[in-house]
Amino acid sequence: CPCKDRKMLRQLLVLASCSLLPLASAFLGGASAAPPLAALGARRAAMNRPSGVVSLRAAGSDCATTVVGGGRIGLTLQQFGKDAGFDDTLVKRGEKVPSDGSGPIYVCTRNDALKGVIAECPPERREDLVFYGQNGFIEDFLRAEGVFDSSTKVLVYMAVAKLGEKPTDGITSVNPEGLTAATGKWAEQVAARLRSGGMTCSVMDDATFQASMYEKLMWITSFMLLGVHHGGITVGEVEEKHRDDLAKMVIEMAACVTEEKGVAFKAGMAERLCAYAKTVGHFPTALKEFEWRNQYWLDTTRAREAAGKQDLTPFHTELLLKARDNAHVSFP
Image 1 (cartoon, helix red, strand yellow):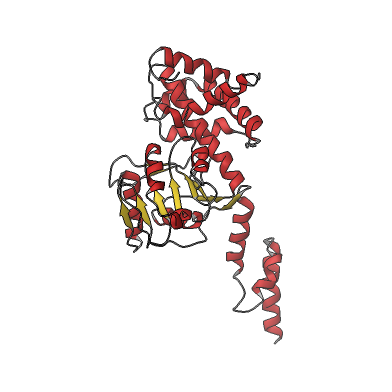
Image 2 (cartoon, rainbow, N blue to C red; image 1 turned 60 degrees about the horizontal axis):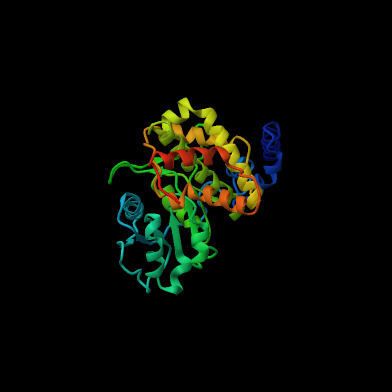
């Protein structure tokens, strides 16, 4: 029918004028073809996705899980699952992980409890472990325990002020897509669970995740040390009053990781870390969990000195030694 042909031609001209000509064949392909606007959305999402990020929104689906740890984070994840219709198994500290379970095992404990959790997890289920939100550097520990390669790791930028309250997501002016990220076997499920609770989560490849992990380590070690050095001020005060010192310390740390580990970082790191600090500006500063956090830089410095190499993080070393002299932290 000539009328139908003219109508189709007008539609093609509209698509062309909107730079959508590559989608025209999908539009004309009948009911089984993808709608043009949906295809355009997917195309734009792929173009805007940072390099190394597998997905910004979960492609997988949620499922029932085991949650180890009955604190604010663990119970928040369990509530997300309950709201989505899943009956998660809660394992409290010291209890064994069920051997007959399935799905991911969220480990929501402090670092000092990790060894016990791994020991209480049946060997055949250790590949389902999801290390969720531990602060500091745990990579070498997980390797020593034989679970690094098979497990799922999550960098958590999510604060839960009180049990039962809605968590604050790690969305900043520099990273509106959110900073929380996961990698490994259950990464897509983690993203689905967090998305169901209104949170964000990127699924990353291993190399991109490692760089993000080091950035988070830099954030907590630099802000905490500078805050203690200046009298125990808040994270927000560090960002507002000592931004130059922060940038100096972070630049040294990044150069150290690049030389020692070969990790490459995207430009604008100090801006990203400061933007996150503004979202949690009320947080206090203290040198907690030293062996998992600032000791990473001290050990690297001492290893380099023993090998006759220069200290790549001298500013951190200087302030850390002063913190020890002032009894804010103890180490030999």
